[in-house]
Image (cartoon, rainbow, N blue to C red; front, side):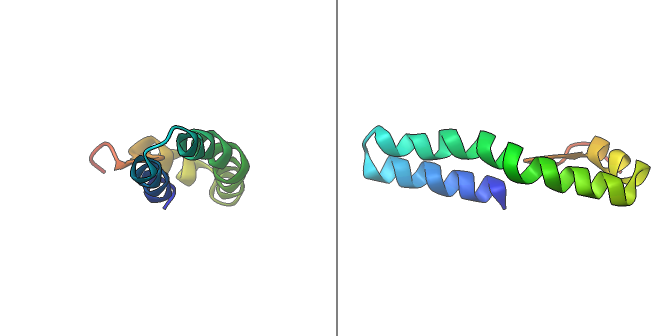
Length: 69
């Protein structure tokens, strides 16, 4: 979901063909990582513990599965 929104923001910036809209995707990624993804992962780690850590080792945060399960 976050990757899709990042790509949408980048596409919108390219469509507008000016430099200022490129601030959107450049600011979105660190903002969403710190404000949304970090707290979500913390809550999941508290709820699922070691199972969530094992999941994180198998699945990349932005691009999905990186190794065979």
